[in-house]
Length: 447
Image 1 (spheres, rainbow, N blue to C red):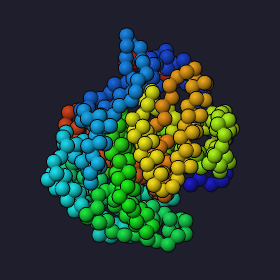
Image 2 (image 1 turned 120 degrees about the horizontal axis):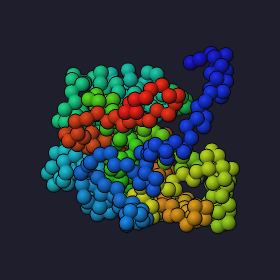
Image 3 (image 1 turned 180 degrees about the horizontal axis):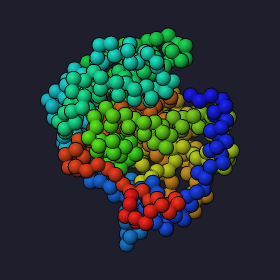
Image 4 (image 1 turned 30 degrees about the vertical axis):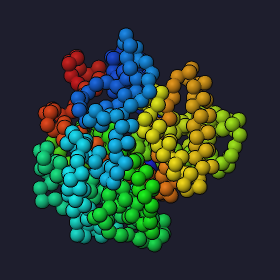
């Protein structure tokens, strides 16, 4: 950390620097640079090929982007069909198997696959004391990153990076994530929030979703519906194409030939951000602030006025963003939000929390109407973070665990794409950047 005088110097120097406004938007157009790897019409720049999953949010007609209902496919299976197929135990584990091995397992295979994962549930001897309890972080996501990176030190061959070795190490990471997440959270609650320390061992007969509830909740209690809906959330979060930010971050790092622990940490760092996986917590905080001010039964006029205040930057974090609204690919609907909206109602009804569900549902309508009014009738879909936030709230899951639970689900996709890229792409990911500073070279071919 810098001293106060150095902080003042740094802030003053930065304030007087040329950072602000030096690279004008016109330069992106002049040099045809795809800002954020996005085309001018909002579509993504193609940078990879994959057979693992596909995200469909619009169609192209005569070179024009046309809005359409959203669909998500895992290995060619529509997520709506997959959810209906997985109304059995170990649903998330079945999806892991599908993403990794290109097909759904039969009953014998899923029992064997679960047995393989359960054998790796426990963390190495001394890991909890040496890695999790010492220098514990206030951020559960940062602590999880530290834990995954520390697994390198407990591996006899940590730098092995061929596809099969990566598969074995990656499955071990997936199996251990529930323990890492629960223990990191419990340590944070103890060392930083002053609460008693409660930890328990993972149970081998439990699924990954069940162990997240067993170890993540203070008393470890859960019922069948709670386990099923969390399992569903893990399925919906398991993958979202190779171009989503955290998966792409994994591929960028992995393309250097580095170890799987480093690649997974890159993904976790990406997912933490409020523009990606951290959006579920941002939704929760925004909605709690609204409920604190309006109560659970405001008028439609009050909901519309609240949406306007958020968009004007006069409420909450003043960002001008209604979290949980809009998506980079989906245009009319996010299929994951569609599925969770229905399941949240079922859960809310059982938990006698339909008033909370009703508030989310009504504000969703008001927010989308206000956004359409400002953006000229552009479709604004509700995304998965809106209803996953509500789901976690109804389940009494701490906001500190929202994004870690998302990470647990997405780890299956990270590993699958990592292996696929190793098998079929032998180049380091290294896009070019256009220099637009002072003219120091006439070599126009220089990156």
